[in-house]
Image (tube, rainbow, N blue to C red; front, side, top):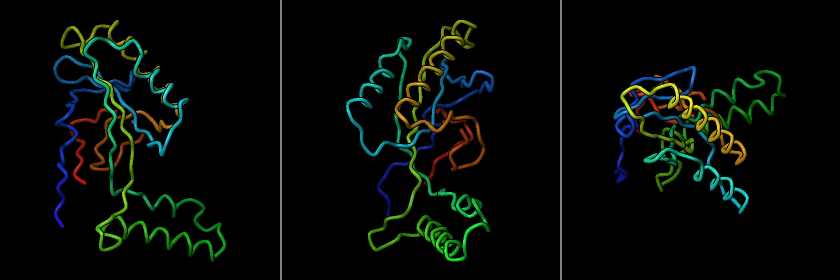
Length: 191
């Protein structure tokens, strides 16, 4: 079965030139700064959640800011985390159940579960913000504003109950970096 989905490398969408661990900001091409978050997608919502997302959208973003919400899937289900937690503390019957679940996850991520072609995937919501700065390198006022916006956006996403962390540079290939937003040039998505 051939996939009809278009696959793009994340680094082609938002190319990062540098990252400041101190500020949590990416310096991007075309005189821009950016940041982002890895979140758990919502299965549903109510008016309260919608109001909180509106707060995010209505923040005092600089002109020409781009906010992006992207669902991202990966076969990296990390079943080893299930194995590590309470490795030998469980009764034997529960260890067998846990081991069966881990094997199911491993097999389901590598091959279709049924004739329909469904495979298991980890799903994340990636929220990114990108905004222009006046020159190639931002001045201290622009950097300060970017940090304030990042902190306010993080707080808003926390009130929605979906934030997992900030996106940081990582060379882990397809896996989601520890922490959440704009990936470095070495990050690619192929699955």
